[in-house]
Image (tube, rainbow, N blue to C red; front, side):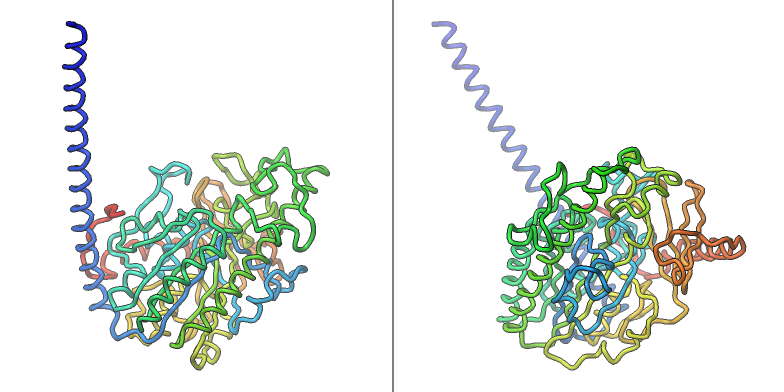
Length: 483
């Protein structure tokens, strides 16, 4: 009897503990939501002040910006590639080669939607030895920096940010951007969800901005069955949809060559699927949207298929010991050359008649000022690192790619036909003549030119460090996580 009574007392005490614990959890949740709402209001107010100071006017039209993760410029068929991977994208009016501002998603996407290089927007991997795999190394966007979705929302557009790669949304956790993350969902489903949301705006007579990030070309690659063998049968080799043969000692012999051939084939077959999914999406947009629409397709970075594996293993440090595959670790052109494709719907083309076709150097930091210009907004061009493609790009402009995800920091500095690949801690200062050596096989032997480009790069970085705090002239809200 006594034991049973004691058990009942303990049961009652346990119930009380559970109730108190539940109340504490609910209280913490309420406090978190209140704090989040406060931070959001504070952030939106800052964006409004930013807009009043730097961007004026009322947007005219809608914009869809599609980023296809890991999309190599060289593998699009209009570049002369051996397979007809992109028959739909080949038909875009404007087809440019551009440089990504970073070789990985976490730092590249913020450049795409802020118009700033990573050293200016702040969403970079911290530490001397970079390692994206450690979440404590992820820097936040600087509080002074405003993203395109935030700005356009304050100016009255409906906005959508939807992604199949979570790292595209992760840098936005200190912004007021509301995002939809559909991790590794195939392109047709992501585009279907995006279409449903933008058409909801269009049918209400609201203009919109949509950022859509597709992840099909990112490992693991799993295209629909009807496309998996589109250009040829892919052998079901171990790890064919991921990355095998990542270490130097493995990258030789018949087994490696067979794997490399089939891995590229799988990539191309998947790209053909993405092209078809984009065709279906754009056809539905044409049918349903009547107002002027700017459609941009690009990538956050390319992908390496062992082009520089030996060079990387000999000259560069990677904490994982991986060389020659994927992205994030280096700045050779297969990783930072990306397409920038533009199509204007329901309006007379402004871009086709602009100086965009002059052959000038183009960077993904040019997207934000181009979008604002196309929407008819008046803005201060000095708040961006890029240029509006409607107004034209200076022939003497330079481009930068930086902020690696793994290993020591590297910078690619491109001016004219020359490209400097610089990694101080790896002991690398190489200049390539991209006209004579487009695949970057042989650094040129010109010590004076190398020193000149290194000095120019350091001068730019020092200048930006000094002027950043006065660039916007508005005190930020502090880089705090909101989401």
